[in-house]
Image (cartoon, rainbow, N blue to C red; front, side, top):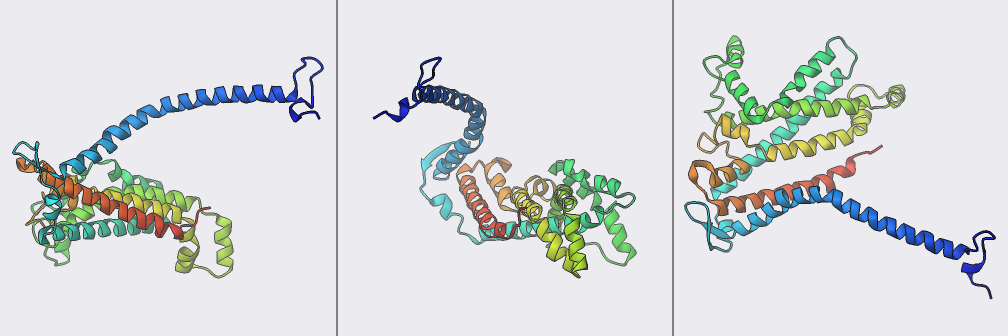
Length: 321
């Protein structure tokens, strides 16, 4: 009985189909090894950056969270979970609450405001391109520069905002000194920075909406808010989801605004979790890296939990085309 590898024999070369196939497979194997090696070499810079700036700091934070530190911030002794136990205080609970309120405000307003502006800006009206450019300019500012701009806008001696309020007979509050306005002020400064980028993302989504679908919806009687929430919003839901995720990360990591505008005050009313980490580790020579690392791990857990909710629950309502 003839084997399957010897069914066909070339009249010119004498090579069977099976031997040719095995030779081709060997060449494929050698090529695959070369491709794997080349791929690994291309990945080395990315892996080096990931290890240097993500993996190593993570393990370092875990290590420092179990250590006490001397006056210079050097790990001195093992304290077990004492740094985590020190977080179970009313003060840290207030910090978490302020972080939650700050994040919710930035995410909600940072989504609704650009979305409300993106709809008219998507219309072909005179001056829309100029307005879109002006609205997105703050995205190019650093957090420190944006904070300085807002401090000048709200300065009691020269504030155009206070002047406008006086025209309507409204007494301007102490924007950065009287509770609860400082946290709102810092949150608005953050919204001002992220709104431009969010506007671009949402405008791109609106530009990609199929006009035939909108026309069919109008024929079926879907107009106004019904058309927007029932047709347009589901079609741009991937852009909305992206804005929610990125804005949440920006709010959780906001530091420059708090540091420049209020420095966590007055009386800690604008101290968020990130600012508390910075304050314990670096400000005023505290050098309490153990406590700061424990707080950083809490922030990591919060970020992972929010990501799990966003990608596990909210993303299910996203309609990808």
